[in-house]
Each structure stands twice: as structure tokens, then as C-alpha cells.
Length: 207
Image 1 (cartoon, rainbow, N blue to C red):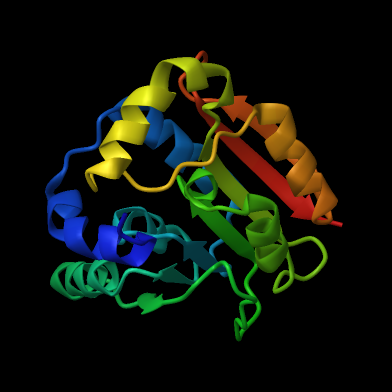
Image 2 (tube, rainbow, N blue to C red):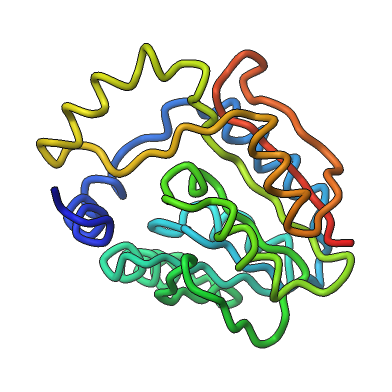
């Protein structure tokens, strides 16, 4: 089975061309996120992929740094930023499974569709908490597939064997919220978009 960086580097081109499957809830997530951000904020998005979300948020913040451990994803993101003339967005490779050194310290860290793709999400959340000052925001959206494992599990396992799906951690909502609190955060908002969907949107503040 291929490792994570091989998987995401291989599919980067196709991923960049793939249309967003649920635009209504994607934009709802963006709107909720914008409501927490200020025009002078320095924001970091981890697991930024090809940079689409970071570039959409860039006009609403002072600066945004997108990171991903896939070199191919970052190359595409940089190309997008240049083509769109976005000057306050930068992109670089980074591994969230290791402690992060971020200078300047961010006002907010975003992690959309990332935590359920990591083997130890609690450790990753801890790594993301460390660079934030007290009062800094951690905003995430995470697939919580644990209640549906009986439905998705067998198919995903077969897809993984053939290199068609990445590693997947089966998380529950309460389990995820407990991890976030244990990393030193107070949860300000927790909801699902769509209402009965499997993606949990959480806004937390470092205490």
C-alpha cells in the first residue's frame, strides 16, 4: 500500500480539477469561517490541498499561509495564487504530524477535511495548538464516519488496497470534541453541514 504523500502527489492534478460536490455547504462553511476572522489576521490553513479555500479567504484577512505535505498540491496552489494575482497568500510544504514552527504566530489555524486522514488526530491537534497564543482560533471540518463504518468500511478497505483511497480514521463527534478540548481549547461552535451529514464543523478558542 502506498504511503500518504505518494497518494496525494499522484492524484494532485485530478484533485485540482474535481468540482466541489456540495457547493451550498462548502460556502456555508466559508461564511461561518469568515465571521470569525478579522481583516488584519494572520491565518494558517493546514492540509490546504491545491489552495482553493485559502485563496477564497485571502481577501478577508491580512495574510494566509497554506500548508500541505504534498509537494504536488503546493505547486498547484502556488500556480493558482500567481494566476489569480493574490499577493497575501503563500504556500509551503509542512507535515502536521510533527511539531510546527510558525513565525509569526497565527491568529487562527484552519484544518478542513484533514484530521480524519491522519493516524493520530489527537497528536495533530496538539501540534496545531502549540503555535497559537491564548485566544487563538482553531477552525476545523472533519469527517466523522464512525457511526457509518459498517457501511463505508468494506468499500474503503478495498479501494485502499488498490491505491484508490487514502488512510481513513473513523472518528465520532464526541470523540473529536474531546480531543480538541484536551489540547487546550474551548469549543465555541460545533455543527454539521449538511445538518444530518458526516462532516463536523468546529470552532475552538485556545484557553
